[in-house]
Length: 166
Image (cartoon, rainbow, N blue to C red; front, side):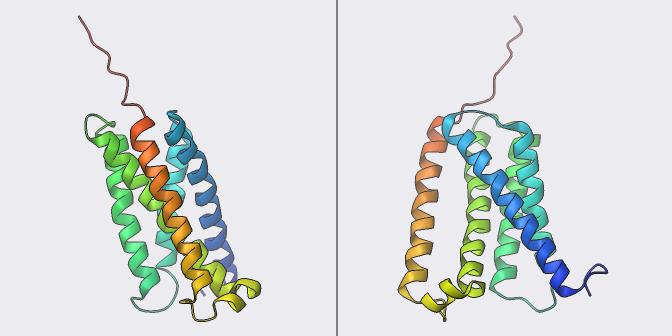
């Protein structure tokens, strides 16, 4: 039992939170690349992505690669939250936010691809050990997509509007 739920029910909840975070991540990434702030979506993305990592720690077990990814994700999210809410994207914090948010989004997608190959029979048959070419190609393609997104987002996402009082 985890938080009063069976492990199966908790796994479903954790997966649902992860998919919602990825959905918000898509919207936020589109906003970053098109130069539009998505304040409400950004807050939801940061919250659900953090919740994904936090709920991942509640599964039984010891430190494993999934938990290490969760730790990295929470550290990167802390940086993104600090840049967005406390530094208000001023100066270099804009690029810091964009980079940190996209790294957190990438890590969530990385885990989703990994889980897809582990849990969905069709994909598992293609890479039963998780080190076969189909898995590597999928992860490499994901990484390339995020590198391109990061490059475009850092160039296109505007700095915050500065109000100058004369």
